[in-house]
Amino acid sequence: MPGLQDRCDTEGVVTDLIVKHFLVKGRVQGVGFRWFVHREAAEIGLRGWVKNTDEGHVEVVAAGDAAQMEELTAALHKGSRGSRVDAVIEHSLDESEGEKLKEFQIEGAW
Image (cartoon, rainbow, N blue to C red; front, side, top):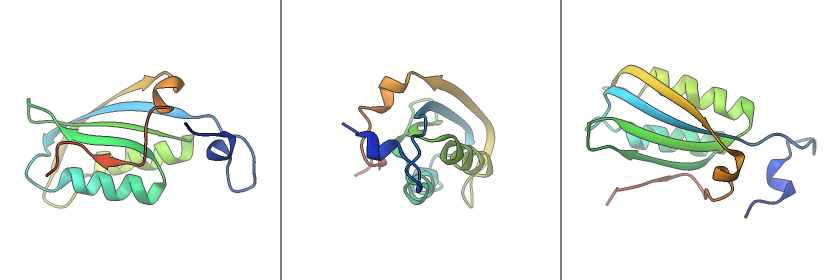
């Protein structure tokens, strides 16, 4: 479970944990989109996961501070090379949902 140090910025100021669910629609399966999201989220320092849906979309749950979430949102809208993002549907989740999340991972990958 994350402690206080996980919720501090580089100067030790406590930051609010933001947890969001994203559904990305478009040509986002079979084009490396999950790996793109994983790389972006790991570089940003987010916790969470990304996976394909049966409907052909990509689902993301991520937890971090406001600046981190802004970066991820921009990356999701941009997409990976070869992908086409038609829509990003975003919902805020309760902060308690983020406490269960671990290091960012791809779900359903080999």
